[in-house]
Image 1 (cartoon, rainbow, N blue to C red):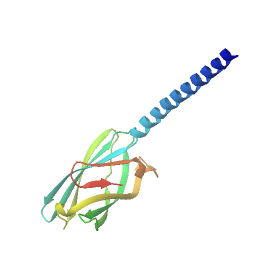
Image 2: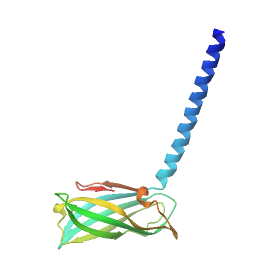
Image 3: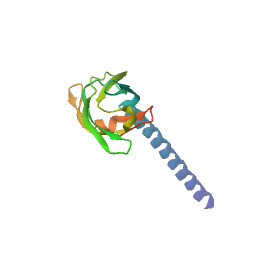
Image 4: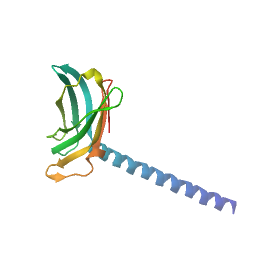
Length: 151
């Protein structure tokens, strides 16, 4: 009887192990698919030019979809984290499997007074001609400068 209990226990362990391995493989496929649908948005450089600050953003759309419309609601905070300005930033077109640099001029703002940028939301997002509702989730913000970019 003891041998039978051991055999049943070993089968349960094998079943649970196989189920967990299959789940891990499925989760990996889902993560890979999701990561291909993301759009990296990197604050790459800030440069004082004339009467304002120029912000250079790098958009990395490694997915298979072109974005004909992508308009972000962006908020600029000063170094005290007080809202300095809010504006709409049109970043489209973004071609599939392509990195793109976009330059935005922030008039009457000095770069050294900027504390952070917040992607407050997405005002418009069209993948091809199809309107998407999940574009905020697709954005992956990062920064190469001391100024944070978050969502």
